[in-house]
Image (cartoon, rainbow, N blue to C red; front, side, top):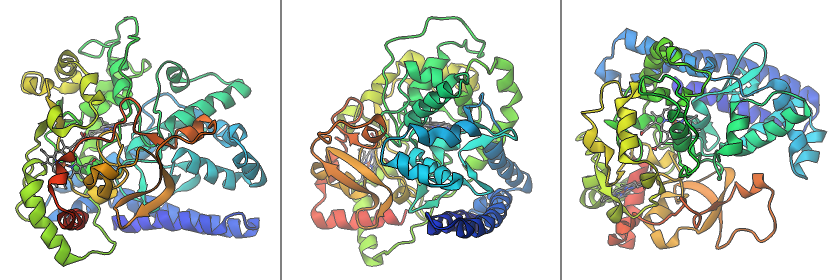
Length: 493
Ligand code: HEC
Ligand code: HEC
């Protein structure tokens, strides 16, 4: 059922694509058809959120929990927890800021065509109910758009939106810069993102964001009970971009984040709301909403691989995995286990910017605050992590790019450390069925010509600070045949 809803979203997308730049009669017909599909999709989507949990219905969760989860998705789709980022008029004028030839292409299109191009540029998905707006922003009746959790946590794979798959196309920095330009022209007031991004980089590469540092910068102005306190901003923040993890892993994790220090719970999920407009009382007021949102996240299942699979090869890969990988990543299938092991940085060898970004004191303060909900003492030892947590690998085929900083485009590259591209960029929706992950263009250098910022950010340069694609090299203990087998096995998780 869930897949039906998503298929409907995708059908709508393809219906629109099929129209392309054709006569408006075609587009109109499609639009009506699309809207119908869309409404059904949204209703089904919300109504069947429980059914997604239902894949594990064997566990017979009670009806109230199912209702809470459905409600959680509805809240994510509709409720604005932050001040609005921009209005429809600003969104519809964004194309005027684009570089050529895209700008001229947009100029020739009608409003629907331009909106479609804008969504593609910023990595947004059209809302199934109304393709003029995005699934990842809550839009009110007056047309004000407010970023939601789904901006980073809802993407697509092979052109299909999978619940909880990270948005590896989100161009937050580019969107924010272009919104600011249009607002200046339309003489509109700047919002918190427009201002914030003048001081903090939001994300230097498409698909990754500096989210951890936003949280840290905002937490500096709160006491443990989230009362606002005046402190000068820190100017030496260790900016670095992160790839958001898949939400379906939440139920397996016992602590959160790449370094596994943070208390798991609905309150921890509320850090994203730390803007100064939200006083401490708003957090208490919205706590119940976040119980529902957490229930929805907790109920998500990993997507099943639907491409070609060589079962005999995967079975051999299972054995290799048991010998070389399970001690850190756990076991899957009937005898499920997950150690949530923190692997020392010297052993894992991946980029260390994220590990070094937080001090033990900052980690402790977060757990001891209202967000930690009393977990401070229990997690004290977790606050000095030696490295990164080996994540659960459920649905890993769908979560490219890989590693916590999103530096490795496919699972094949993860298994072949010396072949990882130095500089790469993905195609808009291309999925590589052989190597499992993003279809990429790779290079040894950034392109020589001067690139506009929007284009520069589509390139991932692994030589930059915080962006190393090194590490996890113990996979080289496997021979070529073992690597091929384990790659096949990873599809089945
Ligand atoms: C700007 C992008 C962005 C937004 C918006 C965002 N997140 Fe995240 N989220 C991230 C990143 C990046 C991480 C990884 C942080 C880390 O591991 O250090 C993350 C981590 C998480 C995790 C931890 C998962 C795990 O397995 O460790 C959860 C749960 C989560 N976010 C929920 C939310 C919720 C709920 C919201 C909305 C209230 C939200 N996020 C908004 C980027 C974002
Ligand atoms: C010594 C512990 C350890 C072993 C053994 C290990 N891994 Fe990992 N693995 C990790 C850690 C830690 C990370 C996270 C590193 C990071 O993000 O910086 C990771 C990350 C990954 C990722 C990326 C996950 C993502 O979502 O980005 C994949 C895929 C993976 N490992 C597969 C394997 C396979 C396959 C094997 C066996 C051949 C293996 N690992 C062996 C510790 C280990």
